Image 1 (cartoon, rainbow, N blue to C red):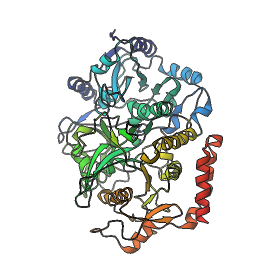
Image 2 (spheres, protein in one colour):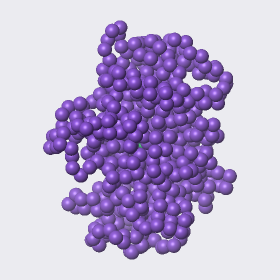
Image 3 (cartoon, protein in one colour):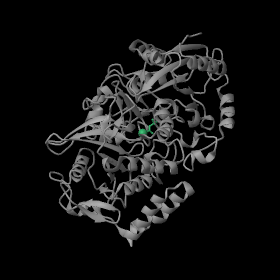
Image 4 (spheres, rainbow, N blue to C red):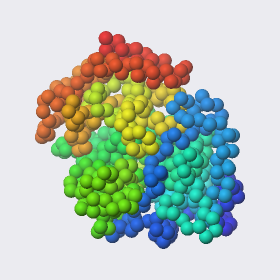
Length: 595
Ligand code: SAT
Ligand code: MN
């Protein structure tokens, strides 16, 4: 049961965790294909993995119905002072939280193997990469980490004897008694789940869930919550953003980073195929961007991940053909439906539903059944390298220079298709006040409007007021080299409840306008909320959208916007003295412009 590692901190930590969690066995991961196959064979033998006849080396998993998404209510930023975590995070005193969690961790791996997973966020050995080690008792987590991060012995070589890493402790919280039969998706009940972060010591402790961001700790926990707090200290940015490269017919490249909340179309935009002639889009990442100021004073972005953990429902050859083509083999599907011929299916995948499937709960499903065949937060885990439009620079450690930032969310009303910020400070104001209707990516009510600043509400590892200030500071440092900021809303609906904008590949039309703006090729029209395209400047050639709908889509209703002001005031009041005065000024200016 003893394993040897050279790194002293790691060796001590493994020993400490093993004593606390009391696993039956310890396994050190090497990241090889052989290891992946071994894990999968265990998962097949236990009945957790279902092989898919139609997709080579691909498997379906069904989670426990109580463990289907991130649990924001059970996610903690545990800093010594509560103020440091700020008003948007749950907080428990670190000593108290550790005491509670230690008692949960005690003996929690009995009957199971403890996997030690060394991984790198960002290309292994790159100066911007960060090393983490996840200890987990879930072979499903090992397989997902293989795809989503760079797992391997090389990480340990780089750590050497004294190198530092971010410890990420994970347990599904379901020990097995002697002779006890395992269930298909072991996890702990909701009230004992904890997703805890100790940013002051760069430490992550997760207990009780096996799903997505709760369990694959390199992603939201490390690459966003811990990284955002490190980035603030070190003067860089860790953001919930896709990264794409757009190339114009003339061959000019534009790099765009866009922040939308979970399940609002980041993956679709990142892999979009432009519907306008001659334009090309390539994907660098679909969820997380780490950005640093380069030697030339511009902001450079890398994607710290190596895979996509995307929402399956709604993904189809119409909406996202490049994602569909990324899913042909070597994929892990979770909570999708299983077809009779051994494939996965989800709502929106095909025009016609199959006549029969086994739904995500393992029950017979036929069209017209009262519930969905796939869970709305069903996911695919696929290697980024399988995306046909992955950019050749996606693993370039130098990153790509960002020209454009986009914020946005799901808003059925008020917010026009696109607007441009009046200045950096106004752009930060747009990010800080971003609001979106909630989705099933988090356990909780769906469709409620909530302020989700920079799409980081669930992911900012420190006081969000300080985070706003950090954005202002970055703008000050970047000066004239700062990316231009835009705000989009693909989801506006007409009064009869229909989407006004076709979205998907036609979103390229909006991106094209942004590029024309940064090249000063077109002028813009002033409005109280920002700059709008002048009539005729947004290229809508070849799409079927009535002039009336276009007008509604772009309209800014002063009364509707005035009604937003008290809500923004309310939102800002949360941050007390930590709210930068420059954002208050932006709010006053907006009120004045609305008259
Ligand atoms: O489960 S995850 O947090 O990884 C997905 C998401 O909410 O974006
Ligand atoms: Mn996300």
